[in-house]
Length: 266
Image 1 (tube, rainbow, N blue to C red):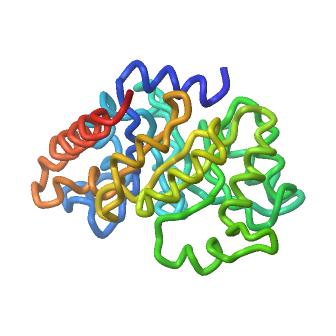
Image 2: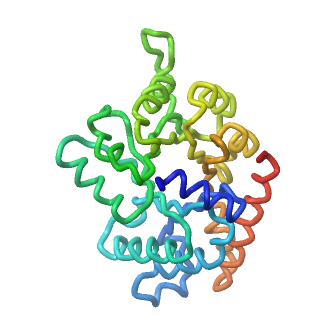
């Protein structure tokens, strides 16, 4: 089974399309966890315990782990999530050429899927695309305001650059392992991209603290019932003011988001 088949089964089993972003900002981790050898891992373990019944996937962002203790914390986190039956999507936005990108792709031996950046073209993504069992989410239309600096540029064909990215991703999906990252902050573009690439699952960030459109995220983000809607800070820091009781608040936040999104699922 490839990643999207496994993800389909996970979505069905927990009745959820929620992606929980595991971004353990050291400045926001509760003080009582600092006594642990790996505070980020201690934090993530409690978040996973509280949210796994509502999580279709966990999405750690590599930026929060890029130091020796961080990589150890990430390895523990991935193993623990897998032990709970939850796939892991590494938000790393990788891409390069030659041997460098082949090295980057080795992380797919540990995680189930990854985000990648298409700016350098197909050869920079080929080792990821060649991995038939793993998921590859290609950045397409991001939710940050500055995304329009490049993504909105009009090509000679009259199409914006982000639409060309979607079309190329569709062509590159030879192993049925490609999805797109499409933000929830511009629902009309979500709808247009869904019409353009009806078979590609979307990873939709921008829900929660960024104020994205939850209804549009579900209506246009899923392809044959498969897709993900991500919330990071809105879930994992929901109990930021609760001290040692932070995890139950995260669990309730994940449960609420699941219920909110399920209103719009068929």
